Length: 408
Ligand SMILES: Nc1nc2c(c(=O)[nH]1)N[C@H]1C(S)=C(S)[C@@H](COP(=O)(O)OP(=O)(O)OC[C@H]3O[C@@H](n4cnc5c(N)ncnc54)[C@H](O)[C@@H]3O)O[C@H]1N2
Ligand code: MOO
Image 1 (cartoon, protein in one colour):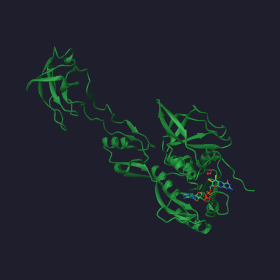
Image 2: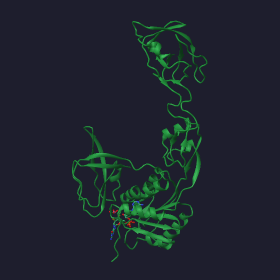
Image 3: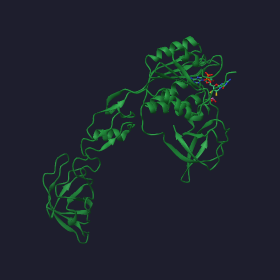
Image 4: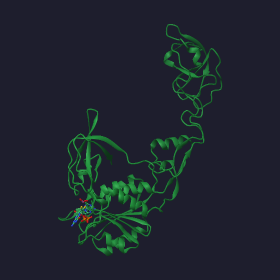
């Protein structure tokens, strides 16, 4: 009798990391417009101060702050207006005692000024004089040179996943291109005589291909590109041939279906036929996803995911995504939300259980509800915001317990 030799997810991650410890990604330079969701391959050191000059954060009058002390509506202070600062131009004049200068929001502060009184707290007496009705503290309503970034600051580090605000700050520092890790090319194969495309007519007994699409979308979200996708029938020669083709153009291959022990389950044989070291994991102590396969053909990682749509996508999230993020050297760990379980969740000890959950905000708390179903029912995941994990040695979780929800 052949049984799965099951590893825990942690053991599997360790083994995979070990087998691919010499793999590394190439580095490429991309424009800022192409850089979102890519991973920085270099530290970013600012060549300039941001802002590069002292700026006003309001529309008002640049003043010497100590000369406004005690000013009020009943007892205003009087200042001579020496002019107006224009946007995009340097403030030519400097301010001396008893003077002020009009500055728009973002405009350069004239030399000598150290605060800005908002226009609403001033009154124009004539075109040369204003009265100040409210004092300002030194540096009030100002952004000083280098307040945001000092020249030489390390603003972003290697391994940082670039988000919209990061792209903005790169532009602000004057970078128009950045070095990022190459986009991994993912080849996706869905196996099964019964599998047809979403555009095909469905005959009784056939099943529409969900895995190609859910896995492709997940990989794209992880910053990868899809090199090719194919549906292959349960025949060893056909599958072997297709994997061979995809090896030429892919950095990672994902195969779904045919991972179990049935006579049609040929994924393991196909991987083993194509070269050393072949399959080095078959079976995980998890639910869903027990029959997962991991192999290596030449230098290429090949994941044989279970055909059940929930199992395939859950294993992608807990194993494949982690592998991709490690390869890309992403520095952040997976984020989670902490919530309180709404009900008891039973589970048998001996394997890790991944439970799909929804979260609802009730009385300032995140309340976590399990979404039940079988691994062939993908709406279990469409109704969920994420998943929680029940450890191998735990027999379920209790209502009211605090849990981490990993968002997908
Ligand atoms: N004797 C045993 N049988 C099974 C075991 C076991 O330990 N012993 N494990 C079960 C578990 S757990 C899972 S999960 C499945 C995994 O099966 P396979 O990876 O071999 O997948 P298939 O048999 O090809 O398909 C399973 C199921 O999923 C549907 N499917 C497949 N591909 C797709 C796709 N691209 N899109 C949508 N749906 C797909 C397929 O039609 C089947 O209904 O094995 C159990 N059996
Ligand atoms: O583990 Mo299978 O993945 O139960 O459906």
